[in-house]
Length: 396
Image (cartoon, rainbow, N blue to C red; front, side):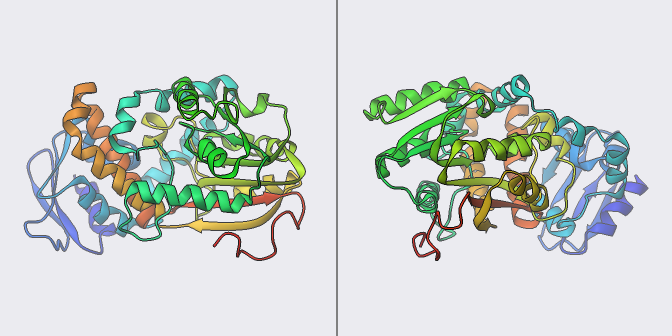
């Protein structure tokens, strides 16, 4: 236990907590501000070394299975203490060493071939429609919202996001628009409603496809907006605009060139694309092992340097770029609070372990965007310098 205690004391410089090991011995870590101090209790002796070797994986597993519990506070409060001390650095030098030896997570995310991509999407998005209705906004948007004010409701912020994207696409009536990774169809439908464009949304989720088609039919928009179950690599059409929100994270590093070349091939000569993706402000690093194993298999959040070259190789111009910083932290906070508030309903569908796993997923990601290296990149791409106005007045 000495190693784990020493590690905790070395990285906690601000605030603190009480660590209780599996032998019920207590250690004061840092200088706790809260009174009584938050307690991190380990109920399994194997965590004494697991959390030292690879905390990124084993902390989430232990919280989900109940072998690690938090007292005198919430999971979010503990993760905030941890993340504001770790910041954008590695959680453990041991963990960095182990992952470099294994090389497994970086290797796995390279190979999102067509069949694997569909399986990975189904793993997360085809769980249960009722689950997502518990915490998403009324239009089921499962991506970063746009908070003009931190206290905006999630419904207002998601509407802000759609309007922001529509303005960046510089849309006009009757243009053909492709939405890659169209989710539950809200963005494609709103583009059709607001701009009178013809929209095609493509997805790999069967549940999302059926929901999108049903929604378009209810709004009498089925002749203006269509949805298909198809991989972007299998599509061969031309469009005036291409939009992709929260999909690039699932492409896989090996396919960045393929992805952006596809975007380029989809676009007419005067076309414009808007790519909205989670990214990292740091140099390239391995994906988070717990997220890869339990939440988004095959997922990866790229560094800016990993995207610039594939964009350049695809004969595309970055005509505008915006970095959304705290917006996803606010989004995840809203989702988490709604999810926790519906715990009784979650437990009617799933067990306690599932609830704790998703609580950790939402709270952990919230803190990663607040204190860590995660942001959202919005790229506006074109083939010509004059495909959009010279100033940004049309956006704001």
